[in-house]
Amino acid sequence: MPWLPMRKLLLIGPGGSGKSTLAAAIASRTKIPVVHLDTIFWRAGWVETPREEWVRTVEGMIQADAWIMDGNYGGTLDRRLAACDSVVFLDMPAYLCVWRILRRRWQFRGRSRPDMAEGCAEKLGLDFVYWALSYRYRRRPAVLAKLEAARAAGKHVVVLASRQDVQAFLATL
Image 1: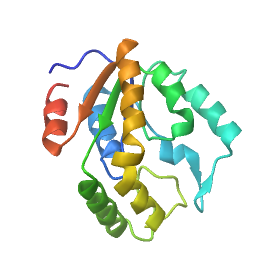
Image 2: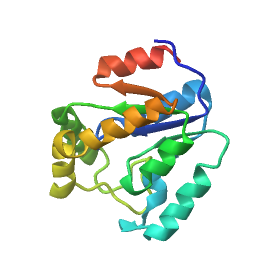
Image 3: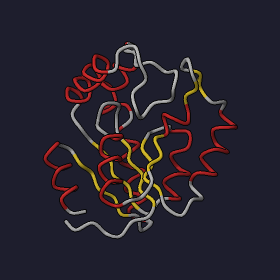
Image 4: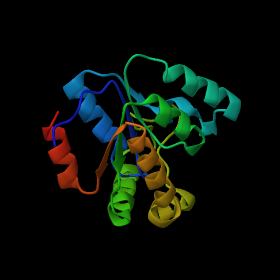
């Protein structure tokens, strides 16, 4: 499947699905700048950006000429879907996502990972693990509906459900 020209790519999927890793790989091939939403939303000590400020920040970011934006943040998903020309949904199995979350926690224990805000040392909370485990039946149906609407509106939508899908997709860039 050849990839169509893109300027504004949205990467979404459950925690641990590989959004940030894929964003970096796409950026290295396309030279489009990456926006890791986690680095902007979170403040030191895992403090959230206030909602009104977050919406304004996202509104400003989506005005840029080109970007690869990774992250979910449902409160601004509709805005980002409207602004993008392409969407990649990483529809990975829950067991793989949880394995990656656990591996990431071990790898970055006591420090912030590169795609996270400074001062947010990697942690492992049961609520986050539950969110990743329950994503397929709690969040996925609504996301798929939004992606169908985006496709109908002319957006290029790709669903990748395995590591092999990701490798095949990267090979088209």
